[in-house]
Image (cartoon, rainbow, N blue to C red; front, side):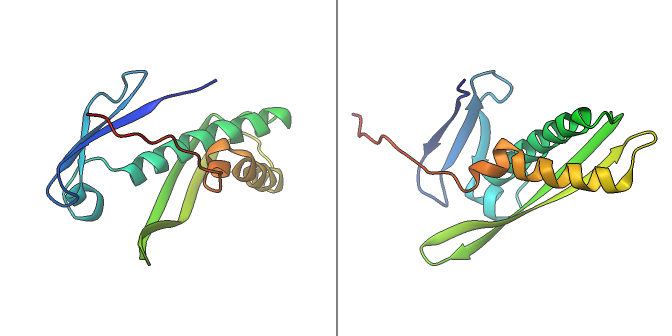
Amino acid sequence: MKRIGSAVWNGGIKTGDGKVSTESGVLDGVPYSFAKRFGEVKGSNPEELIGAAHAACFSMALSGVLDAQEMTAEEIATSAAVTVVPVEGGFAITEVHLTVKARIPGGDAAKFQAAAEQAKAGCPVSKVLNAKITMEASLVA
């Protein structure tokens, strides 16, 4: 299974802009820029997309862990705060903080905490943050 996201960037780093899309069409030419990413201009950026993906992945993973323990959540609400800091040579994502609120009628608090830890470790997006990165790069005319 593969899922495809794509982006097109035009111009210089601070004055240019880009558009990000997904193969499903949910994102279709959504604009992004340096000011939207590192400044106060409203708009999308790669880090918020990573945060949304992490929150969605974690919520589904937690639902699966809970199901295996015969606990069904009426709702799992997750937000992911992605921290980006300057480092030598550029920027780095140094932390993602998940805030999770789940509504589970009759749920056991200790079992829920254990399930949340298991989901945090097992979520594929959690795992990709330490993934091997490969690339094929070519110049085109």
